Length: 149
Image (tube, rainbow, N blue to C red; front, side, top):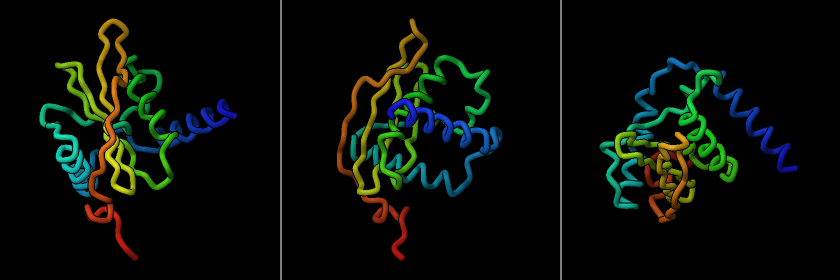
């Protein structure tokens, strides 16, 4: 059953990647969303992401040209996503290549901020999750990202 679920998740991920324009830029609305979530994590976890770069998972559409480094980030992303509830936010990945550090910001709908701490292993050229910290942040509704009907 786990293999079927993993294959299904991989198929959905592949379809999502291939249906997304690889040259698409982040829209103004997406930028606002990303900044709102990032600000909440910076305050909750007392981190500074100024030197980090957002890894846009949507640009990883050409499977044949992905590096080992990119594949490892996608695998981390998929592992997180398959454990999420349907309405949780898509994780945001930030990397600092110069310092071999990274974070995955996983925002739950109830406000829980799960911070996955990454480190880059030069020998294997892969990213690995080295720690995870969970702290209650601001609910999506209170951040203005979820509307009451």
